[in-house]
Image 1 (cartoon, rainbow, N blue to C red):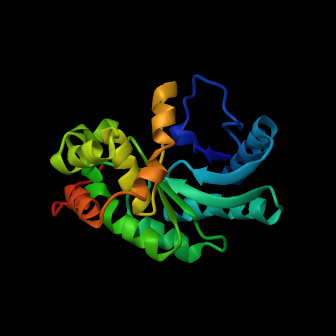
Image 2: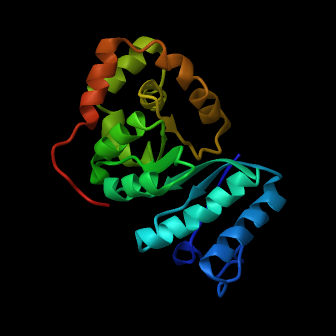
Length: 214
C-alpha cells in the first residue's frame, strides 16, 4: 500500500485536509501519516507528493517520514514530481532512510527523466511512471512499439509497459477498465519476451538531446 503526503501548497483547500492548515510543518506530516494509517490500516510506502520550496523544508518533512519508519509505521519512503537531479541527490545524501521510490510523469518535457532514471538505477531507487500513456500517444504509434505488439499479439500500451518493466521501472496505471487492467497485468510476462533488438529500438524513442523543464 502506497500513499502520499501532500504539502499544503498542493492541497485542494475546498476539500477536507488530513491535517490542520495552521499546524507547523512537522505536525502536518505526523497528522497526515496518522490519518492514512486510520484509513488504510498500514503503509508500505510513503511518498512525498513534491519537493517543498526549499531543500531545507523538504528535509524537514523527510525527517518526520524517517521517524515514522523508525516507529515501524512505514516500511519505505519515496518522492514524486521531482524533476531536478540536484534536489533528488541532495535529499539522498541527507537522508538516513534513503528514498526507495521516485514517481514522476514520464513525458518529453522532462527529457523522459534520462538523468534521473540513471541515478535511480545506480542508487537502488525504483522509478515509477505516471501519465505514461496519455503523454506518449505518438510513441505508441511508432513502428518499434507497433511491430513488437504485432509479433507478441499485444497492444501498444502493453508493449510500452513491458519495455518500462524491462528497464527496471514500475509503470503506474489509473485505469478503471477491467479489460485494460487484465491487459496491464500481462506486461511483466511480455517484458520477458521482448528481444534485445526490440528493447533497443524502443529505447531509442525515449532518448532526447534537448533539455526541457516541466
